[in-house]
Length: 450
Image (tube, rainbow, N blue to C red; front, top):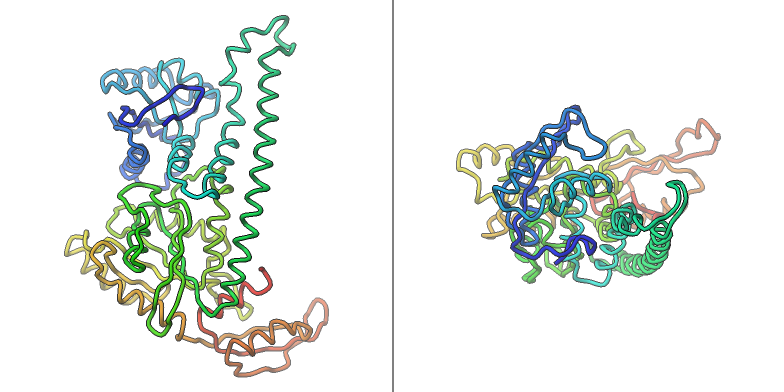
């Protein structure tokens, strides 16, 4: 396993120093201790041994090194004491900062983005997953070519402002990378079209789709295996699942539904990976119900929830403003409070009382490891997909026959009356009151998107 082919090789079992920079003036999303634990978890996910991990407060960011000279000396000392071969910076480093830190520390340095890319590269199992990882890695590598070609820059003759063989090679490499990225994007577009056809086929079929989402290592794959009897990789590791997996399950009142496992979310996910794994997350947008799996025993569970909801908002799946002025969920969400068996008894009693009175979203406490609460989850999901119809009101244009016909075909229309004309265009409108299940409401919200 290598972190960067231009930096040499780092094998499994190598000792690493994990440094979490805490920049003054930037709001911290997670608790410092939880952040260190997560950063160490990322290192452990690819077989590294964490020699030491600590936070370094930064009053003023140094453009060339991020840290001050005294702090760099401290890092070097800790590397010597811990016999660390690698330094992991839990944050984003520029190419210049990474190169300068390597020169000063005399060790390989990798930032959070590079580390997550390595995990993704190791975990991706399907052809699509490997394409997505390669695209993200090439995007990341583009801005770091100058670090790879410093030996050629030294060969340059003439004045500093004249080009030389090093710069020529850099430009050639950049063209190669751009060409390869263009080819990968074309291949991924073909994958997206294929997935879109599969979604459309499933959409036409009477089988609802249930998507598992959640922070990485929340227990999604363990729950997936428990509900489906499958054997998807489920370990106590960050990003154990990268490729979407789908299986058939049976729910109360439904002979067949499709359960989809997805990649876990994480704070500060590199922008390259957000774009590259969009196709993976597109499975969530086709879901009729979302199961938001939370590690309720994690002390940072609230911050993790916020991270997941932020991603769902970016995908357009968070509740939006309905035509009648009420908040309408685009896709209904069930919060799954997993790892219930790991809670202290007093905390479990306290949270159980909260879960019992929580209705938006619906909360189901369970343990995917022991199976406790899984039957309750299936029952709640079944009711959400087959019952729990509520009355909704929509104002439609008289010319919008497609939506009106859809409402008559999929819901129970209670009233269809003439409404006030559009105040801007003067176009005549109608007011339709209809009973819809959460599943059909979600489908209506997406009508015309596919």
